[in-house]
Length: 259
Image (cartoon, rainbow, N blue to C red; front, side, top):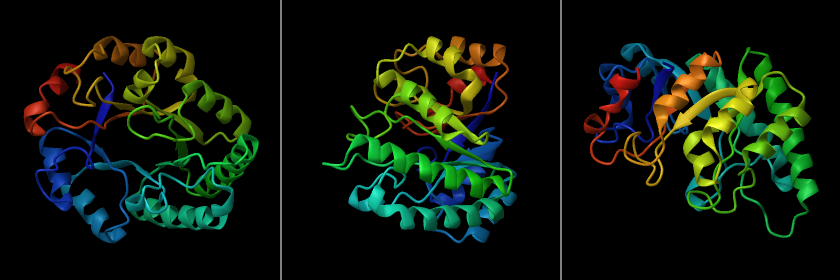
C-alpha cells in the first residue's frame, strides 16, 4: 500500500498546530503536509518535525491574501512580481524544512482576462518556479481543484488540462498533484484517471465524496485505487486531506486496513 501523510491543516485540529506533528506521529504517520507554514518561523516548524520524527512532504506556495479569498497567483498577469517573491519565500522554507515538493496554486480566473493570457502567464510562472526549485532538487506540483464545490472560479479545475499544461511547461520537475476527491467532484472516472496520468503524478491526495470526509464515509472505493497505484509503481506519498467527520482519531479506522 502507499505511504500516507497527515495533512495538518485538516487533521488533528483538536490541538494547536505545533502539537499536531506529534499527534500525527503517534497515529502512525511518517509524513506530514499542510496548506501553508508561513505563520510560523521556519526554524520552529523544523523543530516540530524533528521532535516528532516525521518528514515534511508538501506545502503550498504563498497564495496571495487567503483571508480575502485569493487562491494562488500563478495565472494572474498583474501579479507576476508578487509570484516571483512567493517562490523565493517558499524556497527558503523548503530548504529549512528539507521539503522536496511544493504545490503551486493557479489562482482564481479574473473576469475579463483572455484565457490565452492566463495560460501564458501560468506557464511562464511555473517555469520560473520549476527552475528555482530545481536548484535544491525539488519538485513543483500543479493540482486541478474542483470549481463546483470547494473553489468556485479556480482556473485549473480539470485533470486533462493539467496533463496538457505539464507537457507545455517542459520541465522534468513539474508533476501532477492528483487529488482524488477533486477529480471525483469534477466527474472523473478515478481508476481511468489514475491509469492515464500515472507517469505524471508526483503526489496524491484523498478524501471521500460526498462530504470530503475520511475514506469509507462516501462512495469512493479506495482500496482498488491504492492497489492500482501499487501496481503502477507509484512510490510517492498519499496525503490525507480530508475533514474528519468526528474527531481525527475516531476517523482513522480506515488507515490500518489500507496501510
